[in-house]
Length: 395
Image (cartoon, rainbow, N blue to C red; front, side, top):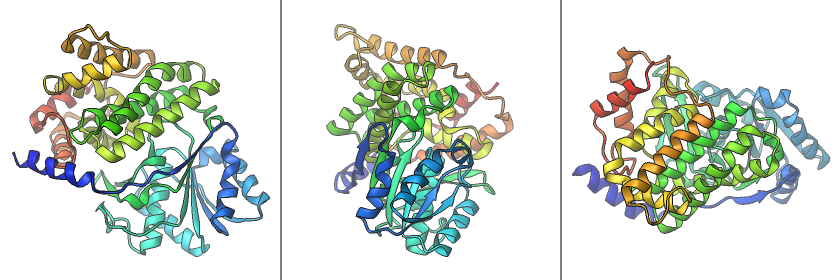
């Protein structure tokens, strides 16, 4: 009862909070816009946050070439690893301040976006990332921030969240504030051409999970549901194509838009148990976030079926998975079946050998604690029910 009351109160508060939208620039070759945006906002020394892989592939250099053409100064911080840690962020803040940077470009996937947001927040607040953990502790504009995603999944270029890993506790925590929404998002599908099929699949299902959990959550609105349906329709159509034909620019473009729309939606409505459990698997075993979501999604949807099947049915009909003449339960079952089939098409594994049975109680308790009163799920899950799901995905 208390949980439901808090969710209702937060639903009302959510609608009062103004969450900005980044200025979206989309299209092949639009990477070049980054230097023009920096000049437009009178920036002189940009901090480029990326990873070694993108540097080795020459993508970071493409960005640098545009920046140098405008005679702007820059510092490259390409030390980002999956699941950015507290110490990594602290190191980045030192480099940002040492080089007197006045702007940030995040070039990469979700971990890069999280790291860049955290660095910018710490720099502007002059506080450690631990002290900024939780809700609305920044409340200050970040320096000019340009997000350039190289994967189509996290939607971080549109969200107000940064996810940080505490390796000592083997746990993730979030920093949430409207100021974390990037000022600009550049969606250049040509940057995703070299993305391996496995990562394409996993990040694509991450976007799908965002859209589904946003749609069925109790904080959804007509506007966010519209974004979700758009994203889910694109993913069902174009994710298999992007997976099988990695150089297909149309598929890459459509998936980047789907990821963005899903990000716009869930940053206004929150997420659910798929993410709550996936965060524990990532923090504890370093299982990639998109992969964890992909494996868990059918199980969590089945768990919530009796409370959420009407929403599943609506998604199924609106995305063409089911016919309007189908009963709601038949349509809902078709929806879950399509997701299972998509996992098979994308060669997603069904379980994790990393999970130790002796850890399941701890993981379940942490997941339920993360979701309690924060995630507006359609059906509450007990620790025992969470343990049962974890057992199902343990090999």
